[in-house]
Image (cartoon, rainbow over all chains, first blue to last red; front, top):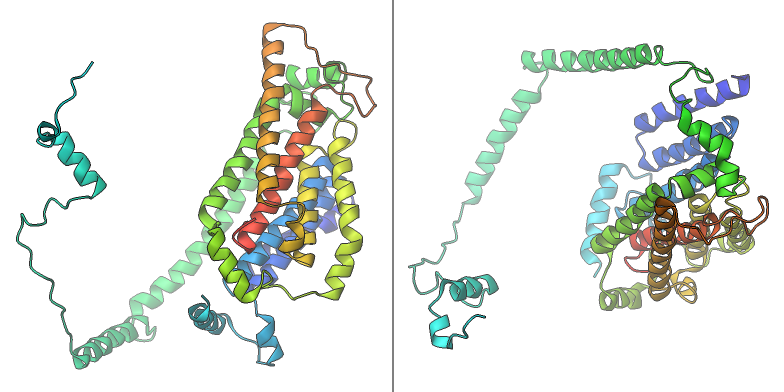
Length: 107
Length: 321
């Protein structure tokens, strides 16, 4: 195992631990995305490019997009309108309340 | 032959009563059992407040760590046992790993007659330079067929759960457009997608068509195609995607791909299992048109996977294709 692979493995472990410790859901999805990218580089190092292509497309691409759209649907990501009004950073509980109010108005 | 009974006789049978009860056309209790209308119970506001107060008091007492020694003790035990459990589990797993045979050892149990045959006769029997594609699409074609079916059933389930009725969807979109959540006409996103989308599509098609010669194959290529479709849709909106990929095209592509895979696969199994001559030529290894059934099956799997990826995104995002 070369030094490069050791660094990548260390990065994997750091990513995996920080996913579970990050408070913000958006951050944890982003960290998970970088985890998949590092994993695909490791697959190339382990001489299995088939898996590397699939990991890069599915793990880093499609799965995280699905996570993002789900987070938007449950209003866990700040919506642009709120950012325009220059509201201070909204914590999770408050944003849930806001989403509830919006859900009531929507048809 | 059963005798046709007159209506009045049929109405006396148990079957008639059962089906009438099942369809709900007549409530068997209505008119037979005396029923009282339910009274609305009213609780005075003061009682509710009292009760809430009491509950609040109890909660304060329970979760006040200073007053509740038991809870304090339990919290400490909980943290300690969680850490201990994790350490024990990690140690146990590492201990087991140390007993596994080293990779690359010739006497490992995975170096058996099966993999030997794949490696030695794979090129001759399947005509594919990429041994992995040759293995999963000819020797193990039945397993891959199962995986493709899983994808099909997964999209069906997502459709059942998340699909919104067409009329309701149109009403919602007339109110706020189909870009409810995305920024409208983002210049950076559209410019990037304008350059990247054709490259991604060509790369995906290349990987699918070259599956038997180079790394990749149906699944990877299909995932890349699906990701390209998602990028195009998120940049330009669903209405532009629907010009070439709507629900009708989706259904045709998906069902045709699955059926073609089934037909080609079953032809291959039946001729192979019965020792009948196979009429699919293997071709010269290294050419695009070689590898027997691998190329058509790759195309089918690629279509299936691309449709699945796009359908997941569209159903999560919009509730319709």
